[in-house]
Image 1 (cartoon, helix red, strand yellow):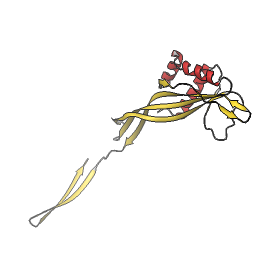
Image 2 (cartoon, rainbow, N blue to C red):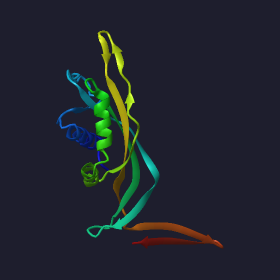
Image 3 (cartoon, rainbow, N blue to C red):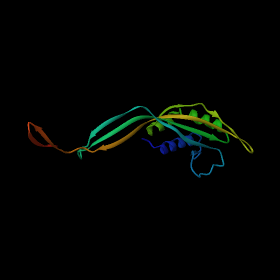
Image 4 (tube, rainbow, N blue to C red):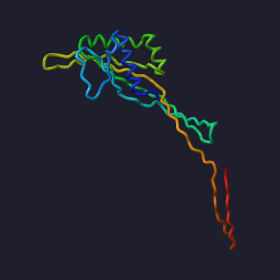
Length: 178
């Protein structure tokens, strides 16, 4: 599975590429991070949900007697892109449309992400004590394949002890399974 921070960094880089301004976008909700003094965008992960059921595959390890379980499942990842100050709405529209570019699609595919959709650009300006701050926001939905693996330890041998009683006779049993 692609880590959330990796996806966030990729989307930040795409925003900087589309606006021809590297470092324009930052990760949202950074503790104790200063707020930029110029216009900027922030990228936040909204949800990471599964689509359907995970598949399981068991692989016999050649180097030992254990089995490796591999689990794969489709994920739908929603990211929120928020733009602040300056031409917030125009920048959001430019980035939203830019996600359709073939070069951006190829960049996402190379990172094993599938582009699904974007929401509409919402103008969400807010009043401040000295005027208005221009703000806009839209969401993007991506798909990825989540993977996990686990080693299942094999049972190499079992010893079974038992006792059978019938008509006053007692039979002791020792069974070894390998």
